[in-house]
Length: 105
Image (cartoon, rainbow, N blue to C red):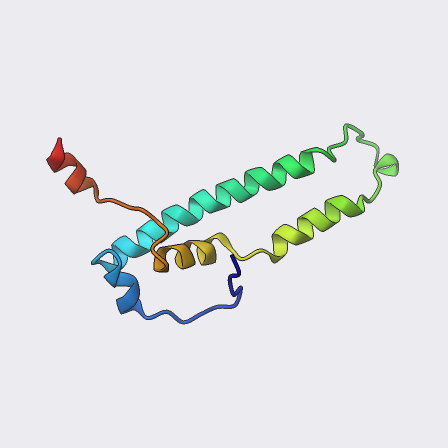
């Protein structure tokens, strides 16, 4: 997915239109951003754990170019909030209201 990492001005009416309420839309986007962030962090930690060293001596610690490249790759990725907003605006995020769920029970 090619996402523009730059800041984009959004029409708040279009954001609100998706859920019927701007605050509900923002809440949904923030929850999705947390999920994305958690997944990205887990992936990064798993990749970097391969390079983990048990050496505490600074003289024995060396620079690992692969580790640096992995870190730089994740730094260049769009932020989780940007990804979540794109997914939400493209109707790729499913959400439901808790009140509707409770009334069905």
